[in-house]
Image (cartoon, rainbow, N blue to C red; front, side):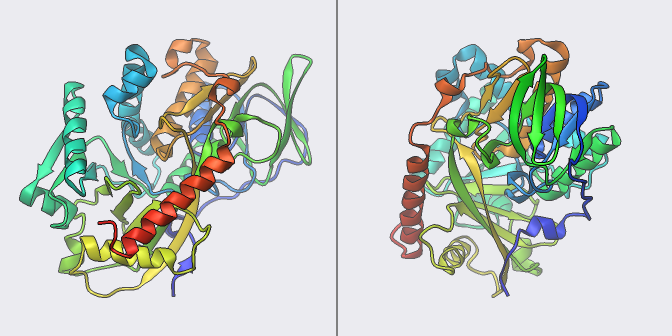
Length: 428
């Protein structure tokens, strides 16, 4: 029977749970949010001997870090040249380089701290679903090769082999990338941070951040943390009225569905090298296999205005489109999450006051972006050098997204109509 439950929490190694903050404490850096950004920052600070307390409102991995697709992708959604047009040549290249190296940073942390992240390191595939998509693949390839990136365009039989479908005739393979079980990774980060002396508290939602006597006081319902510096690393799962960073992005939901474990010759042809894949559709389809052989499909969109079987019907259409020879099977798990989105597909970093750092809007690239930003924040706190940051700070006022709730609603409506068109075979 299909269960609404995140697959990753079921298949990740057993996780540890942490106490709730119940008494006053003091530290040098207090981190709010136990996802990739917060835990990466905690690890890199603790490795340099900096005392850290981390507060998580629910449990580690309960937000986007535990429920995303699990792609360890390089770069942003924007093409490299487009990134330069938006950011300027110098900043665009710096950010592109940092995000290009981010998969290696993720895998290095996994190796150094012996995290069982169920990772693969065989690259990821951007599949062109039509002629326009094929042109986009060629453009992206040219721009990446000019920058010395290890990537290749797959065509014909080689493309069919890598993707496991004859429905795709051209795709971009980025060898820098890979996949992980996101829940296993984030919980592994927490375990590594704890071993380094980081004090983690779960079920410790922040109610206010206030400055007094030259220090910051991060308050929860039961206690407070006195700190010199604070990192706000809650991104799309920011809750409460204590910060304005929620105004700097709008929410986009994401749906995923996973089959039962699949075996046999036909199933084994699907993404045989365990690469992750996504297509060039306006409302993309993500495709991957997990370590147990399940087929996972995903797409942008949430529950609003949907029947219970809406996405199951969508998944059946996509599966039949790409893998029509697959024997009948059962879908096993489905789940939802959301991410912070900006119109230019670029994240934001902030220093709203001296001693406060924040980051938002990873635009669906949270694993690599969050891990990289966490390290950069740690380096900045230790060195005080802004050059360690991959892009300049913005003010919340500069980054504010107008009518963010309305944007989220219109986006969801558009996605619903697009998926209906796919199900009705109106949209190819």
